[in-house]
Image 1 (cartoon, rainbow, N blue to C red):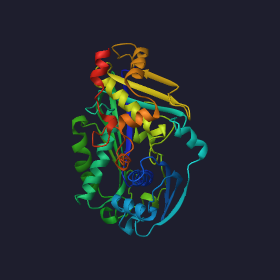
Image 2 (cartoon, rainbow, N blue to C red):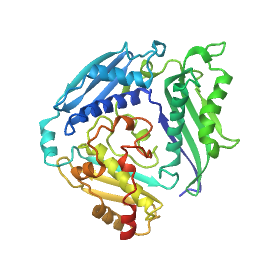
Image 3 (cartoon, rainbow, N blue to C red):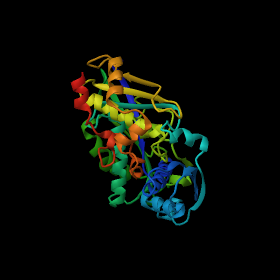
Image 4 (cartoon, helix red, strand yellow):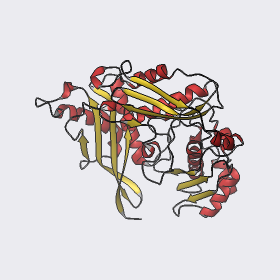
Length: 385
């Protein structure tokens, strides 16, 4: 491991076009699971200027009013003013949903995985949440953007935005934030006389009220701040950038610290191991670290479509394990259910819990419904070791 290195992670606001799509797709999933917990859902959303397209494959016994649901999500995110170029009461909404393929269904019906692929999980001791520090700081920055917009402290902010944090590591441990990038959608009230840039006063306000309260512990006088570095960010959201479900898998997971699986999460019911096995992988990795068996743990599960058991279980503790990685892998198979049905039962995944996962990360949030964040298997692992 290098003595010193820089590592960056980003998060995006709830009004970012891709995150808007994730939230619509998961809102559809929740609405269906509320009345039909055994529905098959693979919902995709596409947004652009003035248009939302909801598609994918869904088999269900219930009915969802897609038009009204989309409007509700868009409104709750904050696109209520035409000045932002996209509004819940003016955007066109197209429903292009079909049924799930019967070729896939017959494999899932017998308990097999809903797809092939690799799913990954990770945990480390950098934060109380057992998550990498850069992604947790980035999430907290966009959460603070949202809070200060909604309570009108910074009433010029819009729903779109991004935050990126770069940390200096020494001997594998985070030391300080070297740079912070903030892109905050705003109206024209904070532009300077040229109309091409936001005022220095607005920049300093964003730094003082958004960045510093989150990063104070990790900053020093050398920390650099980049606020709306092009000058301004008035044209934003779907007006400026096409959005699609599933394009923020690094934001959704571990900030690029470890490899990610091949599939996105939002809009997928838990028979899709892209989602449920990734949640199980996080659950396992977090319990391994919480147990003291390792300081950090990366886990990969791989599945074959239509087959129950994973074709591989890979563990890497980066030399921090109390026992060998191969023995931890054996222990994982012994302690944790790894079939799709076993995962769904263990983590209670047939409930409408998914909309709140669709922004600010799927991991590191110990709130109701995030069952994969429990550490209730830590003592079992410790006793076995």
